Image (tube, rainbow, N blue to C red; front, side, top):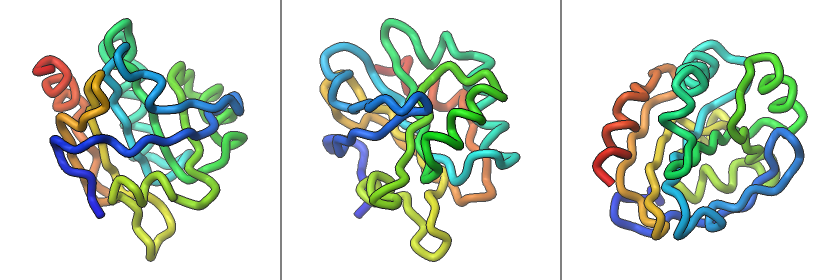
Length: 152
């Protein structure tokens, strides 16, 4: 079932590229969160999207906002990619149970075993305030995330 705007964001705890647990609800009352589901590490469109976030990181990760990128890849693959690309935001492993968090947000492609491109802007109360879902080959426009954040 897809998560809709106005609903409470499903909570999750996943390992980041440093093998540290990150829990969505830990940001409640403190920061808005942009959760970016992407299909696979080391792929062109995904890299382009995350590099756009990296290149304007102060807009996506600051005292008011935290970005969390999520894929089904392992923390170890994320570590190599984060180091290689200079990503200074959490890359979270929805590795096992495979794709459970993407499934809870309604962005898992069962046939391919990976998530589609879903982005959710979650406010400090844990409520989804904006979302976009694109097919796997279609890149997202990060400026839309910024507009959604500015509206909070």
